[in-house]
Length: 481
Image (cartoon, rainbow, N blue to C red; front, side, top):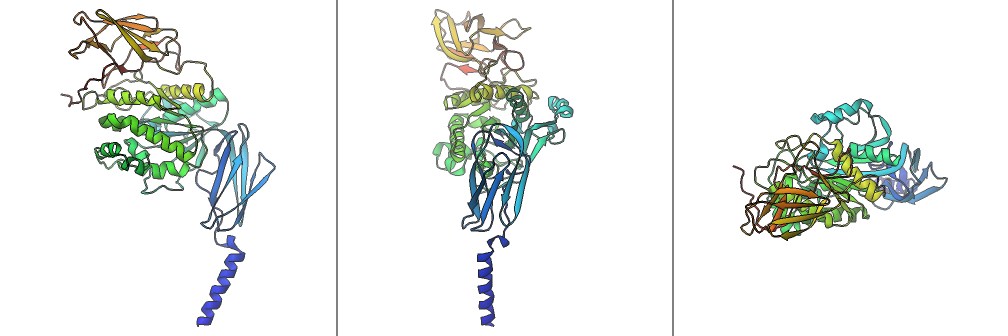
């Protein structure tokens, strides 16, 4: 009996050594599939699994070369492949003990689109703009990769999704902001665009950040501990990152767009630190200093005073981080009691304007909102100067005076300011304040601005002035009565 076992074991060993591919076919990660878009004019990574020691031959239809690689002892293999200028469709063939052929592959621009519900919202959420878009949305040069809501305790190597062409069926349930962003890029650049939608309503930014980076930072850890639990989304650091970001970090991208922050409004004091940590961690994992463009949260009636204003302030401060951009949307709100503004088209267009200007160097229209530069006090008047307003400022059409400017004296009591626009600056005053020392603009949870740059930005109008304050006084965040 023992001799038979020994012989069987020996034969099995010889068979596996001579025929390593007999027990494991080539397998690819989900993000490498038919209909995908690969980043143009770059080096992309192709990878997967097979039998250890198996030789894998890779052929692309845009090249006459046949490349090969050998799977490691842990059954993994990868290869770097150069991509041409935008075009397609192409095929990619992987040949080992079995053959896998990927078809309808395009070469173009690939963007990750992430965040919470305002990034996630789609035609399934009753958005009139995207509903009207559906019938005529078919476009073979826009491709979707939609990662389902998933969590994991450790970083994963794969996810459950597949690339699909844009059409009325595949657009249903796909991020409206991401779609409008991608549509603008596709039209302006005339190249295929791949959109990776990895978003989850309600999620704080901590769940999209590697766990150890939050846990090893005392301030971030303390802030994360204040996040409440719910049955609708994860709250533990790293959970969404592990399952919905880590599996795609080997897939070359042009950049990322982000719409999130509402769930971190109660911990705004650490949000800048949290976001720069998130951005740097993603760039490290992708091994690429890609652009990161994000949306400043919209006006909303939170239950605590000014927490939305403080979160927007933290987002504006994040602009000091390299290769970032922020779309201001204080004007794109129809109801401050709804945390989900319906206008996603202009949000996507404003993000696309940042990408077209900063990533693709097309400055056909303005993309930066006016921002506070400095102020000068002369007796009872304050003059506030702005950057990003080369043609000056203007009040929204149909309205007679600029609103949401407040000034205060040493008593720290803010009063509405009378506003005079003079080119790229405004002159503020209030008869009750003889010696003004501080200015606030649109600095509240629900402030909807009505002052814009004169240049025609995305959608035809100018861009709203970015909310700001000049003081560093304590801000009331008590309960709204």
